[in-house]
Image (tube, rainbow, N blue to C red; front, top):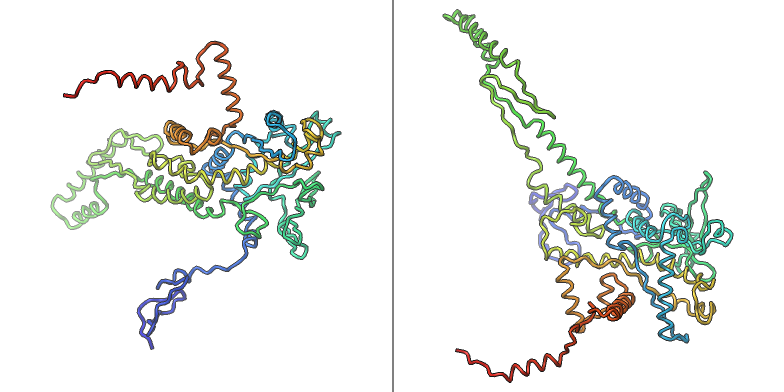
Length: 543
Protein backbone atom coordinates (compact mmCIF):
# COMPACT_ATOMS: atom_id res chain seq x y z
CA UNK A 1 0.00 0.00 0.00
CA UNK A 2 1.29 3.45 -0.92
CA UNK A 3 2.55 5.57 1.92
CA UNK A 4 0.56 8.69 2.86
CA UNK A 5 2.28 12.03 2.24
CA UNK A 6 0.26 13.95 4.86
CA UNK A 7 -2.05 15.66 2.32
CA UNK A 8 -5.80 15.21 1.92
CA UNK A 9 -8.09 15.50 -1.09
CA UNK A 10 -11.26 17.61 -1.46
CA UNK A 11 -13.25 14.93 0.35
CA UNK A 12 -10.96 14.76 3.39
CA UNK A 13 -9.34 11.46 2.43
CA UNK A 14 -5.54 11.12 2.71
CA UNK A 15 -3.66 11.51 -0.55
CA UNK A 16 -1.22 8.70 -1.18
CA UNK A 17 1.67 8.88 -3.55
CA UNK A 18 1.18 6.69 -6.59
CA UNK A 19 3.91 4.42 -7.74
CA UNK A 20 4.93 4.63 -11.37
CA UNK A 21 2.78 7.77 -11.82
CA UNK A 22 3.31 9.20 -15.30
CA UNK A 23 2.81 12.93 -16.06
CA UNK A 24 0.00 13.71 -18.50
CA UNK A 25 -0.76 16.86 -20.51
CA UNK A 26 -4.47 17.68 -20.45
CA UNK A 27 -7.00 20.35 -19.58
CA UNK A 28 -8.10 20.81 -15.95
CA UNK A 29 -4.94 19.31 -14.52
CA UNK A 30 -5.44 19.98 -10.82
CA UNK A 31 -3.02 20.96 -8.08
CA UNK A 32 -2.36 18.89 -4.97
CA UNK A 33 -4.84 21.08 -3.08
CA UNK A 34 -7.64 20.06 -5.46
CA UNK A 35 -8.65 23.67 -6.12
CA UNK A 36 -10.20 22.88 -9.51
CA UNK A 37 -12.00 19.76 -8.32
CA UNK A 38 -13.53 21.71 -5.44
CA UNK A 39 -15.36 24.01 -7.87
CA UNK A 40 -18.14 21.81 -9.19
CA UNK A 41 -20.34 23.44 -11.83
CA UNK A 42 -22.92 21.93 -14.20
CA UNK A 43 -22.87 22.46 -17.95
CA UNK A 44 -26.13 24.17 -18.96
CA UNK A 45 -27.37 26.23 -21.86
CA UNK A 46 -27.00 29.98 -21.52
CA UNK A 47 -30.68 30.70 -22.00
CA UNK A 48 -31.59 28.23 -19.22
CA UNK A 49 -29.19 29.99 -16.87
CA UNK A 50 -30.70 33.36 -17.80
CA UNK A 51 -34.26 32.08 -17.32
CA UNK A 52 -33.53 30.71 -13.84
CA UNK A 53 -31.68 33.85 -12.69
CA UNK A 54 -33.40 36.68 -14.57
CA UNK A 55 -35.98 37.80 -12.00
CA UNK A 56 -33.58 37.63 -9.05
CA UNK A 57 -30.82 39.44 -10.97
CA UNK A 58 -33.18 42.21 -12.12
CA UNK A 59 -34.51 42.72 -8.58
CA UNK A 60 -30.99 42.87 -7.11
CA UNK A 61 -29.77 45.27 -9.80
CA UNK A 62 -32.68 47.65 -9.28
CA UNK A 63 -32.23 47.56 -5.51
CA UNK A 64 -28.50 48.26 -5.69
CA UNK A 65 -28.90 51.11 -8.18
CA UNK A 66 -31.63 52.73 -6.07
CA UNK A 67 -29.57 52.51 -2.88
CA UNK A 68 -26.08 53.23 -4.17
CA UNK A 69 -24.95 56.67 -5.21
CA UNK A 70 -21.98 55.06 -6.90
CA UNK A 71 -24.11 52.84 -9.16
CA UNK A 72 -26.61 55.63 -9.82
CA UNK A 73 -23.70 57.80 -10.90
CA UNK A 74 -22.37 54.92 -13.01
CA UNK A 75 -25.71 54.74 -14.84
CA UNK A 76 -25.55 58.48 -15.52
CA UNK A 77 -21.97 58.08 -16.76
CA UNK A 78 -23.02 55.29 -19.13
CA UNK A 79 -25.69 57.59 -20.58
CA UNK A 80 -23.30 60.55 -20.88
CA UNK A 81 -20.62 58.47 -22.62
CA UNK A 82 -23.03 56.70 -24.97
CA UNK A 83 -25.48 59.37 -26.14
CA UNK A 84 -24.54 62.62 -24.38
CA UNK A 85 -27.39 65.07 -24.90
CA UNK A 86 -28.76 63.01 -27.80
CA UNK A 87 -27.66 61.16 -30.94
CA UNK A 88 -27.41 63.08 -34.20
CA UNK A 89 -28.89 61.70 -37.40
CA UNK A 90 -26.73 61.30 -40.50
CA UNK A 91 -28.87 59.96 -43.37
CA UNK A 92 -26.99 57.56 -45.63
CA UNK A 93 -29.56 56.82 -48.38
CA UNK A 94 -28.63 54.80 -51.42
CA UNK A 95 -30.40 56.22 -54.48
CA UNK A 96 -29.00 53.68 -56.91
CA UNK A 97 -31.69 52.97 -59.49
CA UNK A 98 -33.45 56.28 -58.86
CA UNK A 99 -33.08 59.29 -61.12
CA UNK A 100 -31.79 61.72 -58.50
CA UNK A 101 -29.07 64.33 -59.02
CA UNK A 102 -26.42 65.05 -56.41
CA UNK A 103 -28.01 68.42 -55.66
CA UNK A 104 -31.43 66.83 -55.16
CA UNK A 105 -29.98 64.22 -52.79
CA UNK A 106 -28.17 66.92 -50.83
CA UNK A 107 -31.28 69.07 -50.44
CA UNK A 108 -33.44 66.05 -49.53
CA UNK A 109 -31.01 64.92 -46.81
CA UNK A 110 -30.89 68.45 -45.44
CA UNK A 111 -34.69 68.62 -45.23
CA UNK A 112 -34.91 65.16 -43.63
CA UNK A 113 -32.45 66.12 -40.89
CA UNK A 114 -34.34 69.33 -40.17
CA UNK A 115 -37.75 67.63 -39.95
CA UNK A 116 -36.35 64.71 -37.90
CA UNK A 117 -34.80 67.09 -35.37
CA UNK A 118 -38.15 68.81 -34.93
CA UNK A 119 -39.95 65.48 -34.50
CA UNK A 120 -37.55 63.84 -32.02
CA UNK A 121 -37.47 66.93 -29.81
CA UNK A 122 -41.28 67.07 -29.46
CA UNK A 123 -42.44 64.78 -26.63
CA UNK A 124 -46.08 64.90 -27.76
CA UNK A 125 -45.13 63.70 -31.23
CA UNK A 126 -42.57 60.99 -30.49
CA UNK A 127 -43.73 59.49 -27.17
CA UNK A 128 -46.92 57.43 -27.05
CA UNK A 129 -47.57 58.75 -23.55
CA UNK A 130 -46.62 62.27 -24.63
CA UNK A 131 -44.19 62.76 -21.73
CA UNK A 132 -40.61 62.46 -23.02
CA UNK A 133 -38.69 63.39 -26.15
CA UNK A 134 -36.62 60.77 -27.95
CA UNK A 135 -33.39 61.66 -26.12
CA UNK A 136 -35.01 60.94 -22.75
CA UNK A 137 -36.58 57.73 -24.06
CA UNK A 138 -33.15 56.50 -25.17
CA UNK A 139 -31.79 57.37 -21.71
CA UNK A 140 -34.54 55.23 -20.20
CA UNK A 141 -33.56 52.42 -22.56
CA UNK A 142 -29.94 52.57 -21.37
CA UNK A 143 -31.10 52.42 -17.73
CA UNK A 144 -33.23 49.39 -18.65
CA UNK A 145 -30.19 47.77 -20.24
CA UNK A 146 -28.07 48.28 -17.11
CA UNK A 147 -30.69 46.99 -14.67
CA UNK A 148 -32.50 44.33 -16.73
CA UNK A 149 -29.95 43.52 -19.42
CA UNK A 150 -32.47 44.24 -22.18
CA UNK A 151 -34.73 46.92 -23.66
CA UNK A 152 -38.36 46.40 -24.63
CA UNK A 153 -40.59 48.88 -26.44
CA UNK A 154 -43.55 49.03 -28.79
CA UNK A 155 -43.71 51.00 -32.04
CA UNK A 156 -47.31 52.16 -32.17
CA UNK A 157 -49.27 54.04 -34.81
CA UNK A 158 -51.81 56.50 -33.44
CA UNK A 159 -54.87 56.83 -35.71
CA UNK A 160 -56.17 60.13 -37.05
CA UNK A 161 -59.07 60.74 -34.61
CA UNK A 162 -56.78 60.24 -31.64
CA UNK A 163 -54.13 62.53 -33.16
CA UNK A 164 -56.71 65.29 -33.62
CA UNK A 165 -57.77 64.85 -30.02
CA UNK A 166 -54.21 65.56 -28.83
CA UNK A 167 -53.49 68.18 -31.50
CA UNK A 168 -50.54 66.34 -33.01
CA UNK A 169 -49.55 65.56 -36.60
CA UNK A 170 -47.60 62.30 -36.78
CA UNK A 171 -48.88 58.82 -35.95
CA UNK A 172 -45.53 57.08 -35.31
CA UNK A 173 -45.09 56.69 -31.55
CA UNK A 174 -42.57 54.92 -29.32
CA UNK A 175 -43.95 53.29 -26.17
CA UNK A 176 -41.25 52.15 -23.73
CA UNK A 177 -42.25 49.06 -21.71
CA UNK A 178 -40.38 47.88 -18.58
CA UNK A 179 -38.70 44.56 -19.45
CA UNK A 180 -40.27 42.78 -16.47
CA UNK A 181 -43.61 43.19 -18.27
CA UNK A 182 -42.33 40.69 -20.84
CA UNK A 183 -43.50 37.59 -19.02
CA UNK A 184 -41.36 34.63 -18.03
CA UNK A 185 -43.86 32.07 -19.37
CA UNK A 186 -42.14 29.15 -21.08
CA UNK A 187 -43.76 26.37 -23.11
CA UNK A 188 -41.28 24.78 -25.48
CA UNK A 189 -44.00 22.62 -27.03
CA UNK A 190 -45.54 25.90 -28.25
CA UNK A 191 -42.15 27.49 -29.10
CA UNK A 192 -42.63 29.98 -26.27
CA UNK A 193 -39.54 30.77 -24.18
CA UNK A 194 -39.53 33.49 -21.53
CA UNK A 195 -42.42 35.25 -23.20
CA UNK A 196 -40.89 35.18 -26.70
CA UNK A 197 -42.58 33.04 -29.35
CA UNK A 198 -40.47 31.86 -32.27
CA UNK A 199 -41.14 30.02 -35.48
CA UNK A 200 -39.66 26.71 -36.58
CA UNK A 201 -36.46 28.47 -37.65
CA UNK A 202 -35.90 30.18 -34.32
CA UNK A 203 -37.00 33.65 -35.47
CA UNK A 204 -39.11 35.66 -33.00
CA UNK A 205 -42.67 36.16 -34.23
CA UNK A 206 -44.44 37.34 -31.10
CA UNK A 207 -43.94 38.75 -27.59
CA UNK A 208 -46.23 38.09 -24.64
CA UNK A 209 -46.55 41.16 -22.41
CA UNK A 210 -48.36 41.57 -19.12
CA UNK A 211 -50.56 44.67 -19.08
CA UNK A 212 -52.35 46.42 -16.24
CA UNK A 213 -55.35 48.55 -17.01
CA UNK A 214 -58.19 49.73 -14.77
CA UNK A 215 -56.97 47.49 -11.96
CA UNK A 216 -56.95 44.35 -14.11
CA UNK A 217 -53.88 42.37 -15.20
CA UNK A 218 -53.99 40.63 -18.56
CA UNK A 219 -51.51 39.07 -20.98
CA UNK A 220 -51.38 40.13 -24.61
CA UNK A 221 -49.35 38.75 -27.49
CA UNK A 222 -47.84 41.37 -29.84
CA UNK A 223 -46.63 40.44 -33.33
CA UNK A 224 -42.93 41.10 -33.87
CA UNK A 225 -43.60 42.77 -37.26
CA UNK A 226 -46.52 44.23 -39.13
CA UNK A 227 -47.79 43.11 -42.52
CA UNK A 228 -45.26 45.30 -44.37
CA UNK A 229 -42.27 43.89 -42.46
CA UNK A 230 -41.70 46.86 -40.15
CA UNK A 231 -40.78 46.12 -36.54
CA UNK A 232 -43.61 46.67 -34.06
CA UNK A 233 -41.78 45.30 -31.00
CA UNK A 234 -38.26 46.39 -30.11
CA UNK A 235 -36.38 43.80 -28.06
CA UNK A 236 -32.71 44.71 -27.70
CA UNK A 237 -30.17 42.77 -25.64
CA UNK A 238 -26.57 41.56 -25.76
CA UNK A 239 -26.55 37.75 -26.05
CA UNK A 240 -24.07 35.33 -24.57
CA UNK A 241 -25.13 32.50 -26.90
CA UNK A 242 -26.77 32.35 -30.32
CA UNK A 243 -29.81 30.58 -28.80
CA UNK A 244 -30.44 33.22 -26.10
CA UNK A 245 -33.94 34.68 -26.04
CA UNK A 246 -33.45 37.25 -23.25
CA UNK A 247 -30.64 39.31 -21.77
CA UNK A 248 -29.48 39.69 -18.17
CA UNK A 249 -28.18 42.66 -16.20
CA UNK A 250 -24.56 43.68 -16.74
CA UNK A 251 -24.34 43.95 -12.95
CA UNK A 252 -25.03 40.22 -12.53
CA UNK A 253 -21.31 39.39 -12.72
CA UNK A 254 -20.48 42.22 -10.28
CA UNK A 255 -23.09 41.63 -7.56
CA UNK A 256 -20.72 39.77 -5.26
CA UNK A 257 -17.89 42.30 -5.52
CA UNK A 258 -20.16 45.33 -5.11
CA UNK A 259 -21.89 43.88 -2.04
CA UNK A 260 -18.48 42.95 -0.60
CA UNK A 261 -17.41 46.56 -1.11
CA UNK A 262 -20.48 47.81 0.78
CA UNK A 263 -19.74 45.38 3.62
CA UNK A 264 -16.12 46.55 3.69
CA UNK A 265 -17.21 50.18 3.95
CA UNK A 266 -19.74 49.40 6.70
CA UNK A 267 -17.24 47.37 8.74
CA UNK A 268 -14.55 50.04 8.32
CA UNK A 269 -16.93 52.80 9.40
CA UNK A 270 -18.17 50.93 12.48
CA UNK A 271 -14.62 50.05 13.53
CA UNK A 272 -13.50 53.66 13.11
CA UNK A 273 -16.44 54.91 15.20
CA UNK A 274 -15.69 52.46 18.02
CA UNK A 275 -12.00 53.34 17.97
CA UNK A 276 -12.85 57.05 18.07
CA UNK A 277 -15.19 56.61 21.05
CA UNK A 278 -12.61 54.66 23.08
CA UNK A 279 -9.60 56.68 21.92
CA UNK A 280 -9.29 58.68 25.20
CA UNK A 281 -7.69 57.04 28.25
CA UNK A 282 -7.38 58.52 31.72
CA UNK A 283 -4.36 57.48 33.80
CA UNK A 284 -4.53 58.09 37.55
CA UNK A 285 -2.18 57.53 40.48
CA UNK A 286 -5.08 57.04 42.88
CA UNK A 287 -4.81 53.87 44.95
CA UNK A 288 -6.63 50.80 43.88
CA UNK A 289 -8.75 48.50 46.03
CA UNK A 290 -5.64 46.50 46.90
CA UNK A 291 -4.05 49.62 48.48
CA UNK A 292 -7.01 50.15 50.79
CA UNK A 293 -7.01 46.45 51.70
CA UNK A 294 -3.28 46.75 52.59
CA UNK A 295 -3.98 49.70 54.95
CA UNK A 296 -6.75 47.77 56.66
CA UNK A 297 -4.40 44.83 57.06
CA UNK A 298 -1.84 47.04 58.81
CA UNK A 299 -4.49 48.29 61.20
CA UNK A 300 -5.62 44.76 62.01
CA UNK A 301 -2.00 43.71 62.83
CA UNK A 302 -1.55 46.60 65.33
CA UNK A 303 1.30 48.17 63.35
CA UNK A 304 2.49 51.34 65.08
CA UNK A 305 0.78 54.51 63.76
CA UNK A 306 -0.87 52.50 60.98
CA UNK A 307 -4.29 53.78 61.95
CA UNK A 308 -3.09 57.41 61.85
CA UNK A 309 -1.49 56.93 58.41
CA UNK A 310 -4.65 55.39 57.01
CA UNK A 311 -6.88 58.15 58.37
CA UNK A 312 -4.59 60.90 57.03
CA UNK A 313 -4.38 59.30 53.56
CA UNK A 314 -8.14 58.90 53.34
CA UNK A 315 -8.55 62.56 54.36
CA UNK A 316 -6.07 63.65 51.63
CA UNK A 317 -7.87 61.56 49.03
CA UNK A 318 -11.22 63.03 50.02
CA UNK A 319 -9.88 66.60 49.70
CA UNK A 320 -8.40 65.83 46.25
CA UNK A 321 -11.61 64.32 44.96
CA UNK A 322 -13.64 67.21 46.40
CA UNK A 323 -11.43 69.72 44.57
CA UNK A 324 -11.74 67.83 41.29
CA UNK A 325 -15.50 67.39 41.66
CA UNK A 326 -16.14 70.96 40.56
CA UNK A 327 -14.14 70.41 37.31
CA UNK A 328 -15.35 68.70 34.13
CA UNK A 329 -14.02 65.91 31.92
CA UNK A 330 -16.36 65.13 29.01
CA UNK A 331 -15.67 63.09 25.86
CA UNK A 332 -18.43 63.21 23.21
CA UNK A 333 -20.02 65.51 20.67
CA UNK A 334 -19.07 68.52 22.85
CA UNK A 335 -15.68 67.59 24.39
CA UNK A 336 -14.57 69.58 27.45
CA UNK A 337 -11.60 69.25 29.83
CA UNK A 338 -11.32 71.87 32.59
CA UNK A 339 -8.96 70.42 35.19
CA UNK A 340 -7.71 66.99 36.11
CA UNK A 341 -7.34 65.66 39.61
CA UNK A 342 -3.82 65.50 41.04
CA UNK A 343 -1.85 62.61 39.54
CA UNK A 344 -4.24 62.16 36.55
CA UNK A 345 -3.10 62.19 32.93
CA UNK A 346 -5.35 62.34 29.81
CA UNK A 347 -4.02 60.55 26.72
CA UNK A 348 -5.68 60.74 23.26
CA UNK A 349 -5.10 57.68 21.06
CA UNK A 350 -5.10 57.76 17.24
CA UNK A 351 -7.46 55.44 15.33
CA UNK A 352 -6.01 52.52 13.37
CA UNK A 353 -8.86 52.21 10.85
CA UNK A 354 -8.79 52.18 7.88
CA UNK A 355 -5.51 50.33 7.75
CA UNK A 356 -2.90 50.32 4.97
CA UNK A 357 -4.59 47.42 3.15
CA UNK A 358 -8.00 49.12 2.86
CA UNK A 359 -7.34 51.24 -0.24
CA UNK A 360 -5.76 48.51 -2.42
CA UNK A 361 -8.53 46.06 -1.59
CA UNK A 362 -11.27 48.68 -2.09
CA UNK A 363 -9.76 49.70 -5.43
CA UNK A 364 -9.66 46.10 -6.60
CA UNK A 365 -13.37 45.63 -5.84
CA UNK A 366 -14.23 48.91 -7.60
CA UNK A 367 -12.26 47.99 -10.71
CA UNK A 368 -14.15 44.71 -10.99
CA UNK A 369 -17.49 46.57 -10.85
CA UNK A 370 -16.37 49.26 -13.31
CA UNK A 371 -15.23 46.65 -15.81
CA UNK A 372 -18.56 44.83 -15.66
CA UNK A 373 -20.52 48.06 -16.23
CA UNK A 374 -18.27 49.30 -19.04
CA UNK A 375 -16.87 52.53 -17.59
CA UNK A 376 -13.45 53.53 -16.29
CA UNK A 377 -12.35 53.15 -12.68
CA UNK A 378 -12.06 56.92 -12.36
CA UNK A 379 -15.59 57.44 -13.68
CA UNK A 380 -16.99 54.98 -11.13
CA UNK A 381 -15.10 56.15 -8.04
CA UNK A 382 -14.17 59.75 -8.99
CA UNK A 383 -10.74 58.84 -7.64
CA UNK A 384 -8.02 60.34 -9.84
CA UNK A 385 -5.32 60.53 -7.18
CA UNK A 386 -2.97 58.14 -8.99
CA UNK A 387 -3.89 59.16 -12.54
CA UNK A 388 -1.44 60.68 -14.99
CA UNK A 389 -1.53 61.58 -18.67
CA UNK A 390 -0.51 58.13 -19.89
CA UNK A 391 -2.91 56.24 -17.60
CA UNK A 392 -5.84 58.47 -18.59
CA UNK A 393 -5.07 57.93 -22.28
CA UNK A 394 -4.91 54.19 -21.80
CA UNK A 395 -8.17 54.16 -19.82
CA UNK A 396 -9.99 56.14 -22.51
CA UNK A 397 -8.49 54.07 -25.31
CA UNK A 398 -9.50 50.76 -23.73
CA UNK A 399 -13.03 51.78 -22.73
CA UNK A 400 -13.99 53.76 -25.84
CA UNK A 401 -14.63 50.70 -28.07
CA UNK A 402 -16.98 49.46 -25.33
CA UNK A 403 -18.83 52.79 -25.45
CA UNK A 404 -19.10 52.69 -29.25
CA UNK A 405 -20.34 49.11 -29.12
CA UNK A 406 -23.00 50.06 -26.57
CA UNK A 407 -24.04 52.99 -28.73
CA UNK A 408 -24.34 50.93 -31.93
CA UNK A 409 -25.96 47.88 -30.27
CA UNK A 410 -28.36 49.50 -27.79
CA UNK A 411 -29.01 53.21 -28.38
CA UNK A 412 -28.78 53.48 -32.18
CA UNK A 413 -31.23 50.60 -32.95
CA UNK A 414 -33.97 52.45 -31.07
CA UNK A 415 -33.36 55.69 -32.94
CA UNK A 416 -33.07 53.83 -36.26
CA UNK A 417 -36.34 51.94 -35.79
CA UNK A 418 -38.24 55.13 -34.95
CA UNK A 419 -36.55 57.05 -37.78
CA UNK A 420 -37.39 54.45 -40.42
CA UNK A 421 -41.03 54.26 -39.31
CA UNK A 422 -41.30 58.07 -39.19
CA UNK A 423 -39.68 58.41 -42.64
CA UNK A 424 -42.11 55.85 -44.09
CA UNK A 425 -45.10 57.69 -42.66
CA UNK A 426 -43.82 61.15 -43.66
CA UNK A 427 -43.36 60.14 -47.31
CA UNK A 428 -46.66 58.26 -47.39
CA UNK A 429 -48.53 61.29 -45.98
CA UNK A 430 -46.71 63.70 -48.31
CA UNK A 431 -44.96 65.63 -45.54
CA UNK A 432 -41.59 64.83 -47.11
CA UNK A 433 -41.19 65.07 -50.92
CA UNK A 434 -39.94 62.02 -52.78
CA UNK A 435 -39.52 61.93 -56.53
CA UNK A 436 -41.67 59.13 -57.90
CA UNK A 437 -44.01 59.15 -54.90
CA UNK A 438 -44.51 56.59 -52.17
CA UNK A 439 -44.43 53.71 -54.64
CA UNK A 440 -40.84 54.51 -55.62
CA UNK A 441 -39.88 54.83 -51.97
CA UNK A 442 -41.55 51.53 -51.07
CA UNK A 443 -39.60 49.74 -53.77
CA UNK A 444 -36.30 51.07 -52.43
CA UNK A 445 -37.27 51.50 -48.77
CA UNK A 446 -34.38 49.55 -47.15
CA UNK A 447 -31.77 51.44 -49.22
CA UNK A 448 -33.32 54.88 -48.85
CA UNK A 449 -33.88 54.48 -45.08
CA UNK A 450 -30.20 53.95 -44.30
CA UNK A 451 -28.81 56.15 -41.52
CA UNK A 452 -26.09 56.36 -38.91
CA UNK A 453 -26.25 58.12 -35.55
CA UNK A 454 -23.42 60.07 -34.00
CA UNK A 455 -22.82 60.46 -30.29
CA UNK A 456 -20.47 62.56 -28.16
CA UNK A 457 -16.74 62.58 -28.98
CA UNK A 458 -14.14 60.47 -27.26
CA UNK A 459 -12.75 62.27 -24.20
CA UNK A 460 -9.11 63.27 -24.35
CA UNK A 461 -6.48 63.86 -21.71
CA UNK A 462 -4.98 66.81 -23.64
CA UNK A 463 -7.11 68.64 -26.22
CA UNK A 464 -4.08 70.38 -27.73
CA UNK A 465 -2.24 67.14 -28.43
CA UNK A 466 -5.40 65.49 -29.78
CA UNK A 467 -6.05 68.42 -32.15
CA UNK A 468 -2.45 68.33 -33.37
CA UNK A 469 -2.68 64.59 -34.01
CA UNK A 470 -5.92 65.12 -35.95
CA UNK A 471 -4.28 67.78 -38.13
CA UNK A 472 -1.30 65.55 -38.85
CA UNK A 473 -3.55 62.65 -39.85
CA UNK A 474 -5.35 64.87 -42.36
CA UNK A 475 -2.10 66.28 -43.74
CA UNK A 476 -0.40 62.93 -44.22
CA UNK A 477 -3.48 61.46 -45.89
CA UNK A 478 -4.42 58.83 -43.30
CA UNK A 479 -7.70 60.56 -42.41
CA UNK A 480 -10.18 63.12 -43.71
CA UNK A 481 -12.23 66.05 -42.43
CA UNK A 482 -15.35 63.88 -42.50
CA UNK A 483 -13.71 61.19 -40.32
CA UNK A 484 -12.24 63.67 -37.84
CA UNK A 485 -15.52 65.58 -37.60
CA UNK A 486 -17.41 62.35 -36.96
CA UNK A 487 -14.95 61.48 -34.19
CA UNK A 488 -15.85 64.81 -32.57
CA UNK A 489 -19.57 64.12 -32.87
CA UNK A 490 -20.00 66.77 -35.58
CA UNK A 491 -21.99 66.34 -38.78
CA UNK A 492 -19.44 66.87 -41.61
CA UNK A 493 -22.10 68.24 -43.99
CA UNK A 494 -23.29 70.78 -41.44
CA UNK A 495 -19.69 71.72 -40.65
CA UNK A 496 -18.96 72.35 -44.34
CA UNK A 497 -22.05 74.50 -44.78
CA UNK A 498 -21.26 76.53 -41.66
CA UNK A 499 -17.67 77.13 -42.77
CA UNK A 500 -18.73 78.07 -46.31
CA UNK A 501 -21.47 80.45 -45.17
CA UNK A 502 -19.19 81.99 -42.54
CA UNK A 503 -16.34 82.48 -45.03
CA UNK A 504 -18.63 84.14 -47.58
CA UNK A 505 -20.07 86.42 -44.88
CA UNK A 506 -16.63 87.69 -43.84
CA UNK A 507 -15.46 88.19 -47.43
CA UNK A 508 -18.65 90.06 -48.39
CA UNK A 509 -18.16 92.41 -45.44
CA UNK A 510 -14.58 93.17 -46.50
CA UNK A 511 -13.13 91.43 -43.45
CA UNK A 512 -10.41 88.84 -43.15
CA UNK A 513 -12.03 85.44 -42.93
CA UNK A 514 -10.83 83.18 -40.09
CA UNK A 515 -11.24 80.29 -42.54
CA UNK A 516 -8.83 81.80 -45.10
CA UNK A 517 -5.61 79.81 -45.07
CA UNK A 518 -3.79 82.60 -46.96
CA UNK A 519 -5.19 85.90 -45.56
CA UNK A 520 -2.22 88.04 -46.69
CA UNK A 521 -2.50 86.99 -50.31
CA UNK A 522 0.90 85.35 -50.29
CA UNK A 523 1.42 81.93 -51.76
CA UNK A 524 3.96 79.19 -51.77
CA UNK A 525 5.62 80.60 -54.91
CA UNK A 526 6.29 83.88 -53.10
CA UNK A 527 7.96 81.96 -50.30
CA UNK A 528 10.12 80.13 -52.84
CA UNK A 529 11.13 83.43 -54.46
CA UNK A 530 12.12 84.82 -51.05
CA UNK A 531 14.28 81.78 -50.45
CA UNK A 532 15.93 82.24 -53.87
CA UNK A 533 16.72 85.88 -53.10
CA UNK A 534 18.30 84.86 -49.80
CA UNK A 535 20.50 82.34 -51.60
CA UNK A 536 21.74 85.04 -54.04
CA UNK A 537 22.94 87.30 -51.18
CA UNK A 538 26.61 86.86 -50.19
CA UNK A 539 26.89 84.80 -47.04
CA UNK A 540 29.40 85.60 -44.34
CA UNK A 541 31.81 82.79 -43.76
CA UNK A 542 31.76 81.16 -40.38
CA UNK A 543 34.70 82.01 -38.15
